[in-house]
Length: 184
Length: 61
View (cartoon, rainbow over the protein chains, first blue to last red):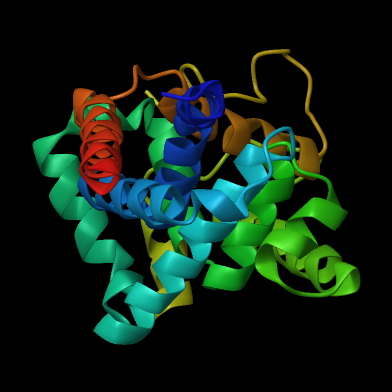
């Protein structure tokens, strides 16, 4: 077919690893994250006439993915927020997918953040977007993104009890207890 | 066991809290990003492509 079509497909493929990482960081479960990525691919494919080749494919796909996630969350109620159960369940089945214990703690802390703070810190802190790009993706003001990122950082520090000095990390006994205090 | 491979603690010195959080977030993200693209997505793109070519051909007849 046309080379434009091939370019679209190739650019989409190139963006898939980071799109999966975004979905996984937002949701915390491989199966759900990949279902969301699949929905996003299908949405994007149907809307490809709206995409201008040469512009930011990654930002375009991320926007579609987050809109899809929130529309599914609205349909399903707050089910996605049931993070504690999901974590325990998926940990039992696929421990190898979750990296070191340290990262498991971090993932759990990330899941305790409000969704708007979580997506903001992921977009800016891990996906490599500027504050401006993140604001566009989330459809909100630049100042809103900045304050969400700041609150997310603060909250993660509180949950993980990260301190600048004398940081020995949360120990195995106190970390689950202090973490639980934030959800209940 | 804890912090065996913990990002942000491998330098031997204490990083500031934001740097520790940032390093962990990146490590988590990259652990997924470095995975191979699952076959289901490659198959899906092939199918979408094939379906579109099919309908384009039919539309021409």
